[in-house]
Image (cartoon, rainbow, N blue to C red; front, side):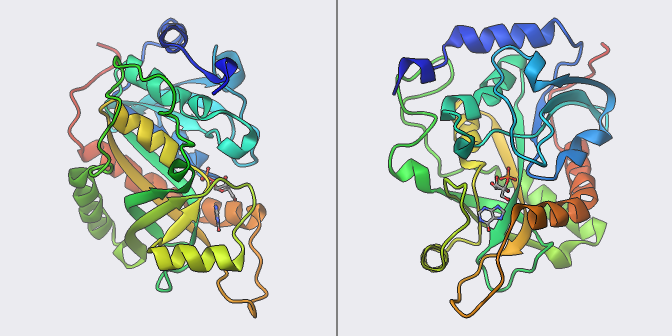
Length: 293
Ligand SMILES: O=P(O)(O)O[C@H]1O[C@H](CO)[C@@H](O)[C@H]1O
Ligand code: HPA
């Protein structure tokens, strides 16, 4: 690992201090919006919004559908911070930069991370527009030590060898399923395994077939690094994938995925996702939390 690709504890602290000097909000919940899902941030009450370019240490957001803003505010009375746009490895960011905000959130006092993403489906029973609650993930870059946790371990954040067998919080998972029932959306809500690939290309047919055989339900190019870093520093995590396309597994199939199509489906379903996340934040237990106090 090159030195320039490393981030020190002081770097996270500096960014956290900058944020604390610019907003009164003290979030307990952080939400990362996937491609085209930035609407999630629009429901925040009393918002304070900062372009990433104004925040010391934050990388630049370069992908269409990722506005590049950090928004603080309240959802159902709970103080949240929302990343309107995330960073991806394929943009050229080292993973410590991709996950930089998660550790900053930890220093701000965040205890729960909600990750969302756009993903292609491999499971034959899934339809475009389905919402998948992430039960677990497979981190393909991690298999070859491409991980935000590689390099010297900082014990102030967490242990050298973190367990990942409960990466996604079971209570939040169950609560989300109940909320889906009460919202009447269970017929398009699934539970499954997300797989991160590096991207930026979409999958070949052979890769798609391999992932299918591995038991992957949905594939995307994000999320696993953020979830790793959040688990490492003791946050609980909840994740949602919006199924924006079917991953082609058949050589005769002429359908080809593209990012514009992904964004189209995200936009179509983002209001439903917003409803689900809002209810979840409203009903989850947090030690919070009123920023005006
Ligand atoms: O994972 P998010 O950021 O939602 O974006 C997904 O959508 C993009 C491809 O269309 C890729 O970046 C993929 O990871
Ligand atoms: O089919 C896909 N593959 C990888 N990443 C994605 N992000 C949205 N759809 C996809």
